Amino acid sequence: MANHSHRPALFRNLVPLVLASGSPRRRDLLAALGLSFEVAPAGISEEISGETSAVRTVTELSRRKARAVAERFPERAILAADTIVVCEGRILGKPRHLAQAREMLSLLSGRWHEVYTGVALRYREREDVFFTCTRVRFRGLSPEEIEAYLATGEPLGKAGAYAIQGLASAFVVEVQGSVTGVIGLPLAETVELLLQRGIIAPSSG
Image (tube, rainbow, N blue to C red):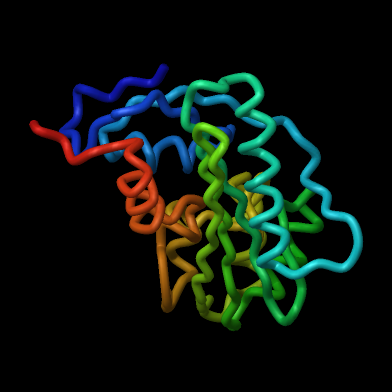
């Protein structure tokens, strides 16, 4: 159980919480609120069969992750999320190798794209699922910049082959929507849901 009592807490747990994700970005976002939670990656296939939309992909995968982990922790609240990037009608997941990351970054260069993040909360047989869509614009990137970024290793394991909270912040000109949604967990919307469901409450200090 992660406990972050050494930092100022904005919220506190009313219910034991499990983050169904191995993403350190999601873990850090949730921890910054002062909450305690256990990390339990779902370990499911992230393939969606047939033709699908970005919204269906992120909501279905986040729902699957929450359900898989809920079987192991039936008495706890389970929070899961999934993020994909869409540019020019193409869904960009996590690149499997540097060549694929290079292709993604070249596509994003000088263009707007959308980042969809689905979130699922499961507690006591009730399931809430929502998504956010954030528009992001990259400035034009030279081939040398792309190669330098690839050499850092940061693009691998990131949807769309970049981390907005990392070195790729030097590429982003404009963001319309949730910045934390681009990182992997839209905090404002997630906190609102956790408050509504009685999972968390404002900290009493």
